[in-house]
Image 1 (cartoon, rainbow, N blue to C red):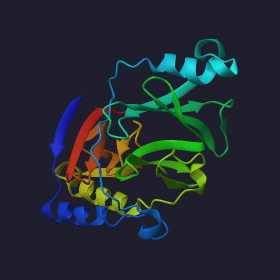
Image 2: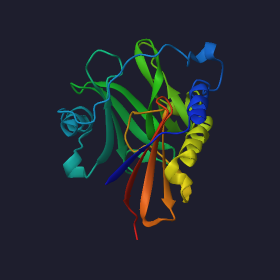
Image 3: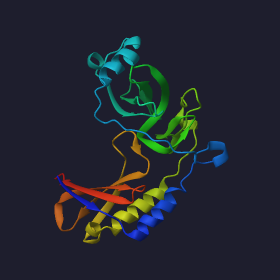
Length: 242
């Protein structure tokens, strides 16, 4: 894989820092406290926690189900949401047993497998916000046709994301797209720029992913990761599917 690090123009970087602070949820900030203080967090992508075992023992076994025996699939992501140095695990099931037209059933577990939350009608992506409520990091999911802000009420996160405040990410996406278009590689005959959902759960919500092609490399697909917080554009290339 060829990796090229491209930094957007100074003007674009300055604009994105201003715009990133302007994104908000529907409703007033007084009601949502969306622009609350930020808190440090860690994302764990390579953890020693056996997520399969936690899912089997804590969620499926009480229902008489098993990952292996019932062919159940899920996606997961891990992050320290409350700053205690221990990770929380987000589990989103797949398939007709757990999913309907509105989305899928999801769970939040601690690293001992205790169920902290059960949520319905959830779809990817699952993004980590820069804000927090009651000592817990906010996160964002897709539900009922929009991005929804999930804030902790000191007891738990909401069980029905479809009823939560809408998060508008269009401005950030347009800013990020402009940074890719302003990059040196895209300026050199780049085309077909397309936004993509984050594949990794708990990706920071200030990051946006795009794919594009280049007239000089017909057999290559480029992926651009834009970080609005850092003001950077990272581009990787892979062979394009034939």
